[in-house]
Image (cartoon, rainbow, N blue to C red):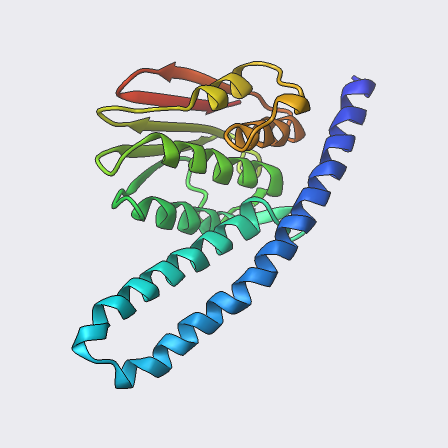
Length: 219
């Protein structure tokens, strides 16, 4: 037990470094993105019908980048309080994420509306949501259930589609031990999720993976 606790402490220190680097990256990028949006507002008065479509395309793209940076600031960075993240912040970020595919998220379980969730379980939920987002198309459905402890809840994410697709590398890293030498751009998020789960003394299971449904369970 002592050895396990020591390993968890080491993992938390390593994640702190990741958080600081991610926060630095997001901070440096958000300012120029904001400047683009401000510039678009100045152009609005002189825009012609010919250029309006191009302007809207730039506006939409810059807005998506800003939303992504806001998401990663919390899912990977140090944004938020020292130990907790507001439940409402997490739900807003995830709902906006899936709106990119015109999908609405069904939330169920205990009412966490006024809750502050442990930082690590909150980040785990946010990162699993990204994996789920990548696994379905615009015709899918998303259900997220939080249960039991208010600050350190168990998580169930169920995504359905006519053709769900969880990348093989993600599935492998979630279901088995993977050395750092085998990490790639494709599986690093799954690896990070496992480290977050360890920090919460929880495990991630893929309870179901068929062509029309994927179910993640964190307990």
